[in-house]
Length: 226
Image (cartoon, rainbow, N blue to C red; front, side, top):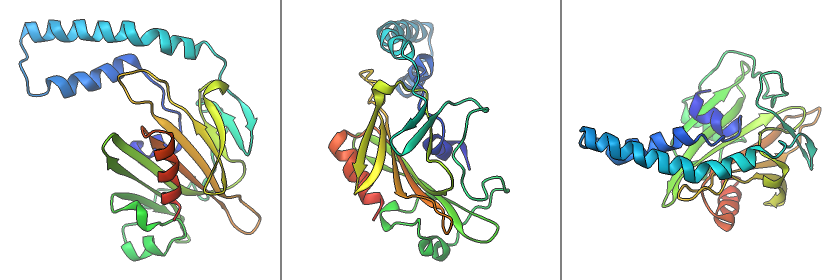
């Protein structure tokens, strides 16, 4: 699965000051004057931004990262040695699915997903992952719906203070709140266990990565399960 979609499913959204600054600088100066004066203004803006954001980020990183069982979920770190969510046949070569009929027949599919989708299946032909994104006034929301076996593992380095147990559409959910580092919108991840795995069938997990506010993001997650 490509890097864009796996950011939704896997590792937590770590805020890197220089990376964020570079993104907004590129947006601000793309196609503009590349003179020395513009470069100096950009450097000054980056320094000001770094000074303003670093205290919030450092305070968050000083808190111990949550680990272990938390409600119906298991919180694990980002290192390769940490437990990872197990998707059926995830160790097999990637198999992209492009046939609309097969995608729509999958139990993971929802008409609310739209057309911008990445879809993968197991060698037996069962679709085991659908990911995509939707654009709205406040930015882009990425989502993924996939089968899993074993524990509902969430990879995150967020402290317990940014985790919240919730219920979405009657299903157990975990909300990993993003840092409030204005002017950047807080990117929140919502994990929903739509179905727990059993001996007969895999579980279903929905992940939503969004800048939307509390009410809007819960409503959107519920819509994506329809």
